[in-house]
Length: 337
Length: 175
Image (tube, rainbow over all chains, first blue to last red; front, side):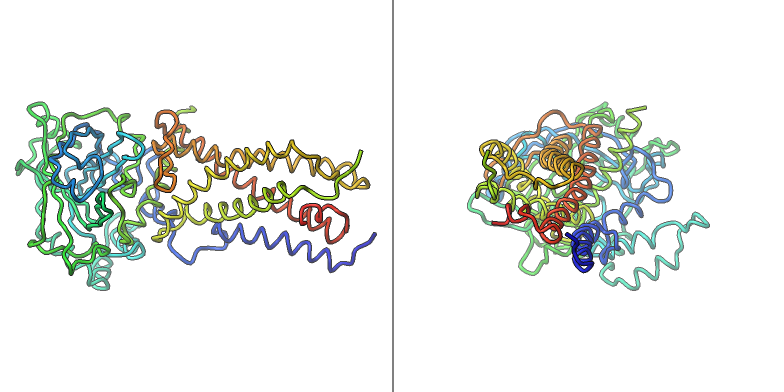
């Protein structure tokens, strides 16, 4: 029972074809599009800090509650937005991949919230000080981060690269205007934090309303009394929390007829309808273990809130997941030792 | 003892239905962990939903497996190949269970449930844990690689029987 060679070749062809499909999908022949792995590689830099988040590595956990007044209840069935109080575990952080960097000098400050009352109502919110993105696609964002990265040889940023990048991306004008006028405060409690990307609120009738939201501070702090220290912002917040909780207004801005909810580079007119959903109240600082497990992926949304098609928003999930996987692997390895 | 010429219809439906499901799930999984494109979120949601279906399907399939007598391997097949066939089949079943279970447990360890088409949410099991997430996340990936190797072996062996040995084996599952 000797089969001709051609049949063995056909057999090898079958094996090669199936293997080839798997290898292709796995990216072994390269990817035509930017991948989450490439993105996180860029964010973590040449010397990743094991066990820490790849972006916004420096930060700390807080606990608090949202006291909702129900003003958004007609627009969304999300439990947090009904007239009720919902606890959260939050995280204040500053931009960059170095968990030991001085926090006061970082150009970006962030506030993330995690509501975990029930699996249906899990909601992760990640807000930053800029109100807009400089660019509108993950590919352009990658190019921006590349341009802003320090030159490996000198350890310094290259102003000519940065300038060239912004010239190639006129959509970054709104961001640059904000950046030029932004004056960092002396406190995490005095910053305004923005959703940047837009989301849809969905009510019980299934009607969708595009919104952006922000945490609007209720205090002013011009200078930081701990400015010489590495953890100046944390120390200042600790001092404030020792006196009283720190509150923000949770302000929603509605998209107008001419606003593109899928473009995070443009501000919406100040005349747009705004509603205050209630107050975000930070009550205390928590140990790192309180939020180390939390993946602040802004696409983890409750019933009543949906993602827009904004390409930057959609790209965040995969990159966050890759960062989470690497961090978890390192923590597991440290744990096993 | 009579030897059936083919698998019963129920077994063929399970086999080909799950083959299509598993192949799609592997390709979706491989692509979705890399992509930054807008389809990431809906594919991940679908992957989780179909993963739950895959677990239900393999439980039903295993139960069904004990209801009939499978066609015997060709009598003239060398003992080593018979052993390889049995080991491959056992490993395929282990992987078909390990894939959805590790997937559900990694999602659980990250503190998430699984949304079933918006009808209800399967709640996570246990407390969120980075160590637990890492264990099940890497197990999910390793099992996927093993499963892909087994599929290549399984399909190649089936085609070998049909094309070169020209025995009844491939036909017993085809019709």
